[in-house]
Length: 377
Length: 235
Ligand SMILES: Nc1ncnc2c1ncn2[C@@H]1O[C@H](COP(=O)(O)OP(=O)(O)OP(=O)(O)O)[C@@H](O)[C@H]1O
Ligand SMILES: [Mg+2]
Image 1 (cartoon, each protein chain N blue to C red):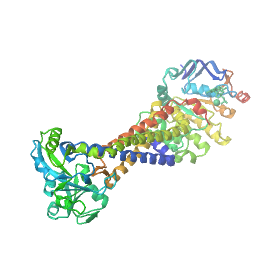
Image 2 (image 1 turned 60 degrees about the vertical axis):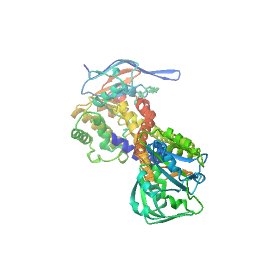
Image 3 (image 1 turned 135 degrees about the horizontal axis):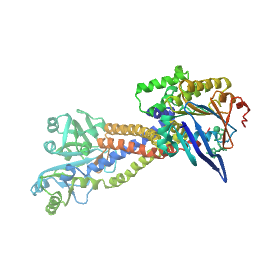
Image 4 (image 1 turned 120 degrees about the horizontal axis):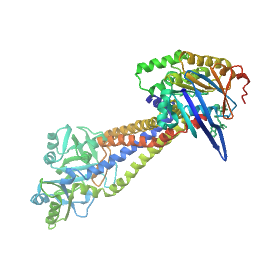
């Protein structure tokens, strides 16, 4: 009986192809939107976002405008609950929202190796630590800009040599380029000797992040520059707040895509069943049960939806995997990565929508008034 | 007890304000192995009768019993199962599934019954052989002539070895020559495979091949002799 379904779909190849393509495009967009949502979610969850603090100058947002004394490091390190402090100089080519943002983080190379969740996929740490203008590049940036070890990379006033490419289980890290702290401080136009953009604070296992954060701000109130300390996730979300709103809104686009697939496949299936309503009357006369007729129609709509949906999902995940897409603003970035969760969601949504789309035509096929359908010429 | 047994069967249709009652309290018995032809003026309810016997339509009153099963009592799903195992339906226009080959069309009813795939293949091949179309098994309906299509339709109706086969003007859309072939085929199926046949026809020649001739006129069945058949008026 399944052959009958396949042959019916094959007979109307043009219609089948158009429907499958439509479903694929919509599911492609759905997965893209989903990956943006996931990226945003990851930015504000996970131990890196939740257990690390960022100390930033009070009331400043763009990294170029936050200037903290580098030696705040010693003050912060004394506060109970603080395990380690890493002074970071940030430089970005674009303080506004952009799809091709390049963010440099300058910090002590040894400390980077020890504290950041990075794994070099090419190049080596030795080279990075011993050369002044050496940089290690996140996988996403490397993909987007086509960088590999040994390349010279220049943007604005900054010119670095790629000493390594790294991947990370924290996707937003993969949008960064790390250099040594001094290198970035002495970059022309930055004039940041003795100053850094922010301090990243790593906590002991038992410390309460929020309590430590307010202790830091309290203590530095007496210093030259007042600070605002937040969890890293909260810091990034507030930096990206405009984008966060936008992305939050984009999930409606995801729902719209699902609705689109639903109406597309439902339309095609309704047309297909109504064209062949007499065929269903014949099938039932031969002895096909109404429930079985229903299943035949559901199989038809589900095949359309799953073939299109899985193709669209696969394409989206491939594009996400190879594109290294990210959106960023003011030094914080959201990475769009493919994920198993996304693949599963895409597949499940396709199946569910396929079944739903076939529901009404399936009932039409099952309840066809046999005699009057047979009377039709 | 007769194989097919109708008692007090009524069926009426409503068309706007008007109610047409083609079948009003009709009784009928058909014995196993009978080949019954049913003639009568147009619009007297011959097709309606076949639809009731095959359970694709329901009477307003009365009972219909086929091979001991009271079909009027079965649900729609149960009726489908019952048809798959016990009833073959030959349409005037063959009504083959266009996307399936002759073989697959004939195979269809067997897919609804429990049997092994080799049994299934054997049944289909036998049925195609019986209608003389073994060499056309892989052809699609559009690649067959009208007479061949009708023969595939007949093979589909007999493949499950049903107890009763009903045919609604099986030769109605065929030319004289192919019509004769189909008549001979039906007669052979009745004689050689012992299939009980109820055939509606307007064709007096076709009616003559049956073992028993009936006329339905104004809600009444009338038995007619062979020589009388040709005098039956067919409006
Ligand atoms: N679904 C229906 N709705 C309304 N009237 C119907 C319906 N089906 C049949 N009829 C009417 O019932 C009567 C009997 O119809 P039926 O098709 O059984 O006649 P028939 O004897 O087969 O005629 P013919 O020889 O022309 O095929 C006709 O008057 C027809 O108009
Ligand atoms: Mg009729």
